[in-house]
Image 1 (cartoon, rainbow, N blue to C red):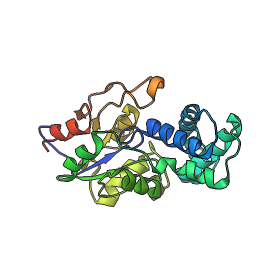
Image 2: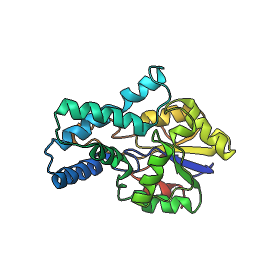
Image 3: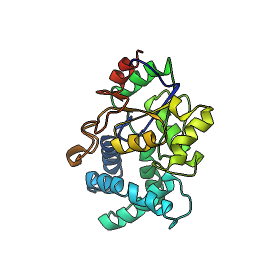
Image 4: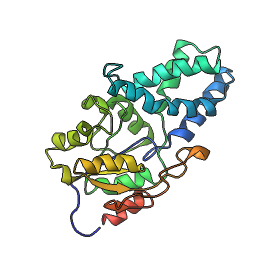
Length: 237
């Protein structure tokens, strides 16, 4: 990439760095088998993710006080277990299932690409996940973050400006010294509106057969790459 480069790069995490759908389906299917509990785990995972934005919107609208994503996930899980008629789950089971979001696997290019970027730039997640979730996920998947920017540091979820601008404030950088990288055009649009640089790479399998957006860049982002390895190459690393 010719010209100006960032000092720090922050990444959307769910779907962009880690494969939440395949990871959760495999994790919960194996757990259900071990526990002898039959359920349509694929449908549960898809419904659980579909609850993600509506649950955060309740916080944004003031219907709920500030609530960590782990706790929003648990509320959604309890409702879906009842809706799906899944029987035999204990409280320990529900805790374990909810922590499935801490056990997500990275896309194959993520760790090697991030390792390359870390050699030159400050890197971290800027995610709607809370710090504990993102930290445990990084330890599980071997993601080499320098810093964890969880939503609970800001008391806001993306795309609220307080998240993007909060990164710059915490790092003592100008917004234009920070790059937001994501597989989601909407996330990048909100970051650009706050003055951040932007990088897009697609994850066409994020939602499996349900993918209906973000197959390609829909704006002229600062970097458009095929994946994080390609992004590192375009940044000259």
